[in-house]
Length: 298
Image (tube, rainbow, N blue to C red; front, side, top):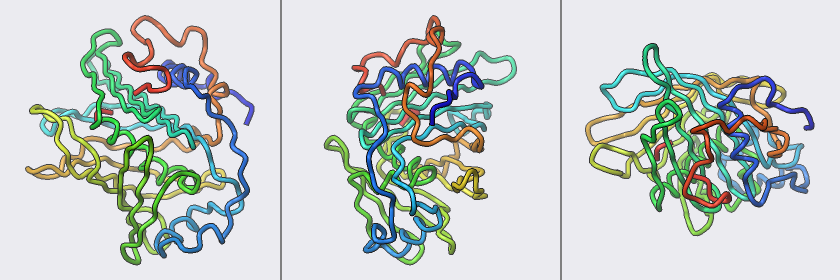
């Protein structure tokens, strides 16, 4: 892919591209043979059905993708929903996830959230109106939370990436399997539920930390999806949600629709093409970490 993605998109995209440009080492094309049926042999039955539905065979494993989402988000169960949009860039085999989100509502100042996982470290940083810090988190809980979120995104949007990473596949039953991903001394596990075709229905994990008023709490986290559609030869979900399963009941805090035309695969940071004016006042890179460890709420 050689065409720039940037001219079609606004400042949120440009901020993501600027963070990608700072990555070291810079991700680029990997040399790999196309995935074959032999590569699927020995995997759990449900996992084979999933990978066949996602049509991973016949082309090399993907090593990066960029995606766009729109939807709504809320910070607490009794707070109102806020409209939001997000851009994301993920890479392999150097596992990296950059995620930029903007939330806004009539009469309210916009809030921006920036998540990252790189070099084995996770980080979240949020601002009000691009100026006032409202969230800032890092540490072991964020490392694990961001890594399992990376795994979630790969399952739903770029499954062949899993075949090039240190992933262990474990059989559960005919409709689900477990995945364990290891990176930089961290290990996370999640369960994938699929339908009769092999299309993912839900991803769930206990390896994520929820930011509650009293502090970080480890809790089950799930992302149900539905409405699979084929775009440019690749299956993508139309809709997805993110749910915390807390002691007082489930809390759905995000609902997203995927933007089919925005998804791109095997894109280098230079092909994201950040403009010179992409870093405006208040839009600096996520602070406090080296560029190789730039680091949503857990």
